[in-house]
Amino acid sequence: MEQPDAIIHQPVRLKIMAALKPLPASDPIEFVRLKALVNATEGNLGAHITTLEEAGYVNVEKDFVAKRPRTRIGLTKQGRRAYEDYLDFLRAIIGAGEAP
Amino acid sequence: MSLTSKEAAESLAQAEQARRRSAELYHYSRAAPHFILWGGIQVVGYCGTYLFPYHSNWLWAGLILAGCIGGFIIGKRCPDREARPQAWRRFAVMIIAVAFVLGTYAVMWPVHGTQPAVFPVLLEGAVFCAIGLWVGLRYVVTGAVVFAAALAAYFTIHDAGILLLMAAVGGGSMILAGFWFRTV
Image (cartoon, rainbow over all chains, first blue to last red; front, side, top):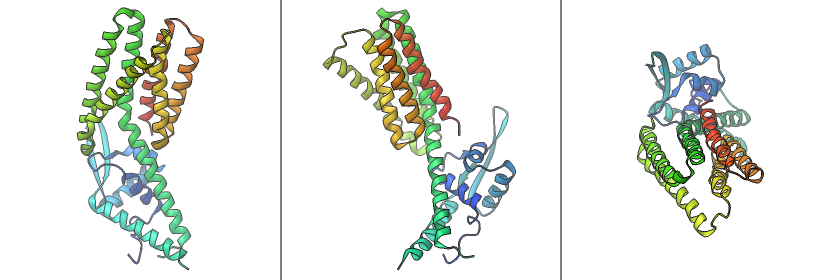
């Protein structure tokens, strides 16, 4: 990767991807929990999730629990791979910076 | 778009921090129902022992069995499908814990009635502290509070009233910790 992934290369979206990474694919996180985790406002988080969803990096599931709406977000396989590639890109820069 | 190695290191550190916090909170949320279950079992067990001391062995045997089955069911219903086949391990952990407590009594038979009331709660506190070293601070805080309160109770209360205090310290604190673990 010569250039960073422009979708992930944004601080809030990077945090979202990092927060989703350790979660199992079958157990997506609720929007409210993710909001607290990445310390973002509802509107801000919603906009970033839309960007990630359009890129195919996250899945957004909407349903009702006890008549209350619930939104859950999970990482897709493509998103998981893109995130790993982005981390490799960062490590490569750090490695190049440390090289004599 | 170019990044310096310092910026890359900062981004990597932020990502790692977010990943670690998310993993920790996920672990807490999965453990929470087990904490509430076993906290409730301890409250019923200690209060039942206080009220019906001559039936305490059967009461505890039934409660522990119910807890093991309940823990297994919670594990089987875990939203993480990959973790479901591991549900039997929680069952096994409780059997090991009960075997350890009974084995300890066999080797070092309690000489006072308050000892068997306090020992399982002390063990619970110590185990939570140890788990916390790997998982996160909330376990350490819960374990330290439980351990200290149980020890303080042992040296200050010398009658059956200690059973009610252990219901609050051992069971109550687990229930509270369970609700705490559900928060972000």
